[in-house]
Image (cartoon, rainbow, N blue to C red; front, side, top):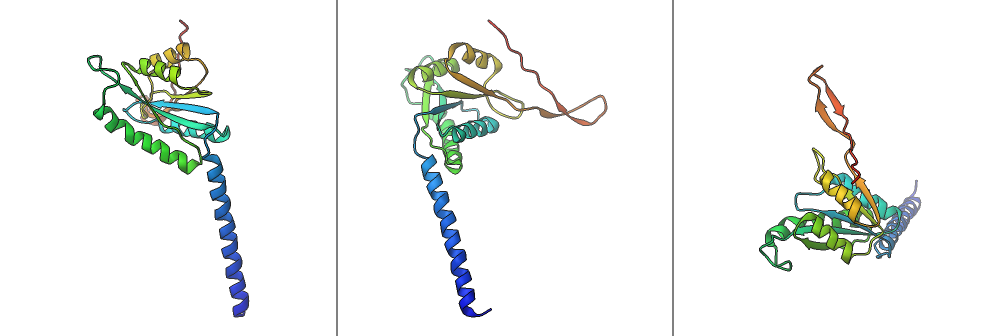
Length: 194
């Protein structure tokens, strides 16, 4: 192989790399443009559900929608509703940052929010009154992940209009005392009609 062939091969590889990088940048920029379709992902300061966030990002990417992560901040009754909440924000803002970074890596546009309320349900109701959204992805609490308790999810289904998607872990690893082996524990979902 002579030097001219080697230089030509290197230039060809460099051109292919440049084309691939430009295509990725164009695709990511196209997806980061805010959309009229909005998917809300509420969470609290106790933590994020990895599965819930993954599901919300997949849905937003597939529907070319904007992800709206909403940190639900609880305001004690003895304080005005619009008071500063340094402790709540100290826990919630880093979580919002994590969601924004994950969305950017996934090529999903983000429009973050903080919603205040006296209780979790009050904050969710305020969210529903202030925000237009197409879908809401709610993560159910699990032994391994943060999320909403079944009573709160039932309340959301009864009081919040729109498409509500509930995500929960498929099970957890447990120890079976009968045979001493590790097994996958099955969990049941109970739906209560009120």
